[in-house]
Image (tube, rainbow, N blue to C red; front, side):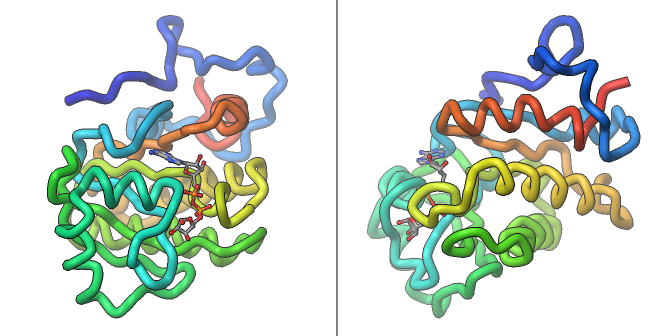
Length: 204
Ligand code: AR6
């Protein structure tokens, strides 16, 4: 497996200078902590079960992470399958093969344009539910909507982390996954995720 980086450094702490000042929003759960990771880099390089694409409702490809995923998967191959799906509504998700990607599947979701917490939540939950339905155990999310769609980075980070934590707490969801990776591309997101991890996935 090639998951290069991770949340916990050698001392077992998240890299975060203000760690002792954080007021966790959730209880410590080391089992859940082990299912979460931050990765900084290009999502198309991850050799995992599924990567999430921040697509648009036509599913015909676009710029940003969508463009990179379509190129790396093989433009024509991925588009041919996408065309059969009838598009995708904001907050929903659809799955395709990964073709030339190291990831086996791509889960396409359409984030909101601008800040809309319910719609963004719905993206994360729809992707996770689809992952569970297909019995996929490892998935990576880009920072949905925070690029071309203009969702502010900090609230988007809070929504992503809280949604994933809440989803893992429900029923048997946690048993169905091995690793959920937040794939961070920009330094601004690395900063927010590193500091907020401790709110949502506190260490003992
Ligand atoms: N790997 C991981 N993250 C990436 C990569 C990559 N290779 N490339 C960019 N990002 P965006 P959106 C980050 O704009 O805001 C498309 O045209 C990027 O830095 O890709 O949901 C679609 O077709 C940012 O942090 O997606 C839609 O029309 C995050 O991915 C529209 O853009 C999301 O930025 C969707 O806009």
